Length: 410
Image (cartoon, rainbow, N blue to C red):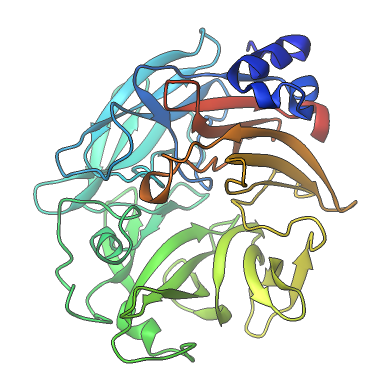
């Protein structure tokens, strides 16, 4: 695998972003851009498997426009990059079920060296496809997916029609929410999908959760939905965000967990403000939240009723970001939203020492705002030594950057 290193990396960064020519990244972390225009490439959210188990193939989506919302007719190509063959682009399929922030939930099936899954639009509903990228064998499931279990055998999903109705950019265009007039419907919510048989069943309804526990700042007319589902590290439970929108457009959130079958539901963070998160292990979740006396910080939540809440990196991780644990959970990979210079930082936090290690900064021009912003959403390789981010590159729009962080984590 060829990665620009040393002085070459400095020259590359200097050419791309003159203001970053002296950045620490240029001299310490090898980097290269692995996709190129004229089409734009990105992967989207940070909690999906982008690398195959061998770390040779890297998944990506390809689109020929930016800076507007997708329409039902806008089709993107999904494919993979061969990192050992001059970053060759290999098309895999197409879809019209996608959004700027999370794409089409494109990811490798955990435990498989050849199968990927992504969401698509069927005749009457959203569906998903599973494809062997080498043999071409494909099967379809009559349901979309949101998060896939580490076992590779099951998935759970929220209702993308509902999400798009209340949070455009995270759902898909094409099918309206049939429960749009219902504030907390009993017939939609979270669904469990058996990836072998295709069997799908609802396991948690919006009505059920809306009536569970205490809703902070309860008001008439609030509209409930689910978003951001993620299995824990052994597939026994999953976390999801219960969100509601007020008539004035503002939103609040509770973080909730449940068993794979939707039972044993636990309200983990009920203060109304939970943002990005990741599982450290089967029983603990790192999440950005708001708790006294520190206020908004990252906290480690025990997955238990009235579980312990412990601040993490409170002196150095003072801004919300897309956090993930590396396979060695002594390290947290994170980023920031654009600062006053429209730069986004990518960094590592070392839990035992409490120190941060900057990987680099990438640009975020003002045109990348709102629904079609380009968050870096850093993702790591299976061995935790490579990371990939999405960011605009020169005049080519959003592309994929590959960083080698082995010099920091080894």
